[in-house]
Image (cartoon, rainbow, N blue to C red; front, top):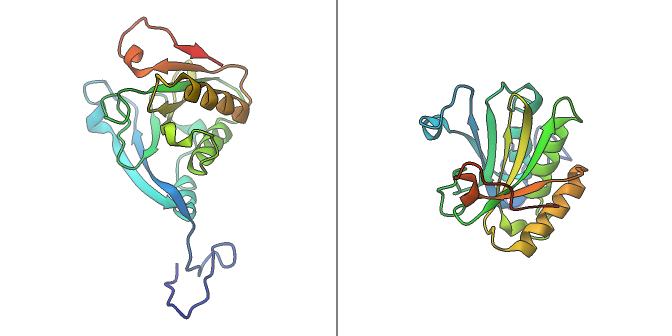
Length: 196
């Protein structure tokens, strides 16, 4: 990217992919994390690795285009795409009162890469009515089914959760998705709070 002076004309990546000097800022910065296979609960936080933080459209595409596609992730691996300053942990203060919309992806199914990308784009583009409620997105590659989870910060705000869930279901073309309160997630045997 070339640097711009006050007399330079602004050139976007659309005008010149090699010599642009203007970037398009996102409303929020987002951090991409990763955990690989063999991660146990005891070592999970130690293996949680920051890959990058993005604050512009161009930075996002640079990061996304260099990721291993989600359909090629090894079983047990996960990507975490969270607002900057929010760790993808139930214990993070931004997440303790929240929950997650969970989409189970049975294999093989439509392009999981497309589902993940569409969720990311709608999130960074603030396309959801209650976009401020979203803390982050997880793609988890698992043996039986892969999973996309959209973490939110206020599980008790049923109206906000149902709005987000309905929009997410429509965006991804799912027949049904489920919401689970993080407090229930920490207790085995607890079921989903509600479905849309």
